[in-house]
Picture 1 (spheres, one colour):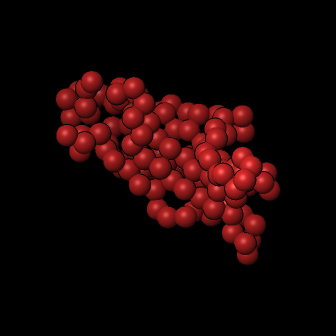
Picture 2 (cartoon, one colour; picture 1 turned 60 degrees about the vertical axis):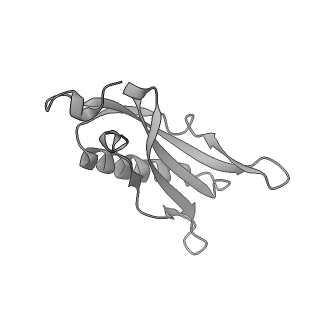
Amino acid sequence: MPEPDDMGPDVAASVELRAEVQYDHGNHRWRWSSAGELVPSMREAARTPRDLQVMLTVYGRIAARLLEKDKLVLRARVTAHWLPTGGTAIGSYDWYRSAETGRLIPAQEPWTLWPGTMR
């Protein structure tokens, strides 16, 4: 599959951003589930690692605001998937519900792994 560096300077590859939430599925077995019903996945073109970072940050903030309305959501995340390689995960931005404010707040800065660095 083509890497960004192999496609030329004017070509951008598709990234799909997906929102997920963590629920207790009984016996305290927490697992990630799609939040696609509340926050639809989104495809965007990424040309640089900075593009990917910005996309995760913006989509993450939008997803957090929409998901925090559901008080059962204690953790949420946005993941980025590199579509030219079949959906390899290349980024994540995790959020958790603050006990002080009740809002979803970032657990850390978004992390990314630009596909050209995976060689």
